[in-house]
Image 1 (cartoon, rainbow, N blue to C red):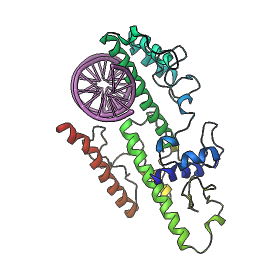
Image 2: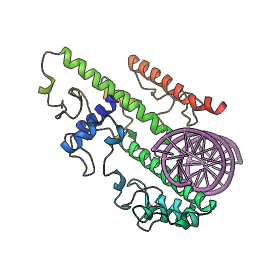
Image 3: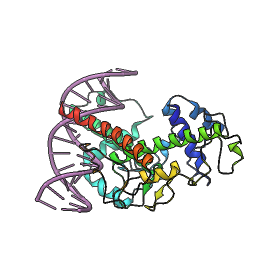
Image 4: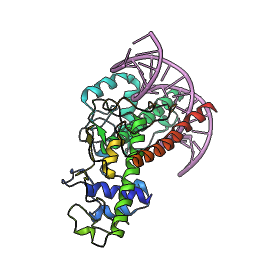
Length: 297
DNA sequence: TAGGCCATCTGGTCCT
DNA sequence: AGGACCAGATGGCCTA
């Protein structure tokens, strides 16, 4: 868990540009306590439930109907394409659910509601829950590296990429820590190295090495190759190889986990890095096989 | 047209 | 008892 906390801070520190208003700074004393908490839920932005300016209530539109995808990156067209799927009763029920919070408790009549109404209410809750899950996936997509593809990452790919991204950031931290121990000079003298400015977390190690570290999370990556020496560069190469990578893709990545998804690319020349990727891919492969085993049972 | 991905519904289970 | 969570089923949309 401490790794995740470090990464939350690392990601913050890697950004040179001022954060978005909605972004959370771990150096903020108010947020420091959150990031210091051992409970991951505490790390979530308090603004999360109302993070979408269009729908103040989480996943409920102002009109009370379900907002299928309450996220800035989702076009209105996408929303419109989903809303009609909702059965009319469900929309009505959802509006009731969305507006009922904080209001009077259920009446005896509501308590004795027929099973059909309960089923509809459960459907609405489930819908809302899944929307929350999708929102979380969207948030995750927004912070992990991705190629400039039109197509967004699938849920499965998003989880894979997040896992790889976290592993690479962790490795980056470890590498720089070792450099810090080995080198006699203070890394804090290097303009490209930033130390966690607060005691909000245990991260007192540099979060960026003095070589080829991108200014921020590589939101959009090109498929250009270059110096593969840094961990950050390797991270680029670990990014999905859909349309921009081709030829020697080892196996295709399937969301049902039937094959071993390999994330490394054909132009990966560093044998060591390739070895690492293979190990990671094997690990991912193991993970991806797990659901199949459960299915088979 | 087949396959992938997704949203939704549904019933079961667990938890508070 | 009611809500959260989960997984299976189903149907729609999109793409190769």
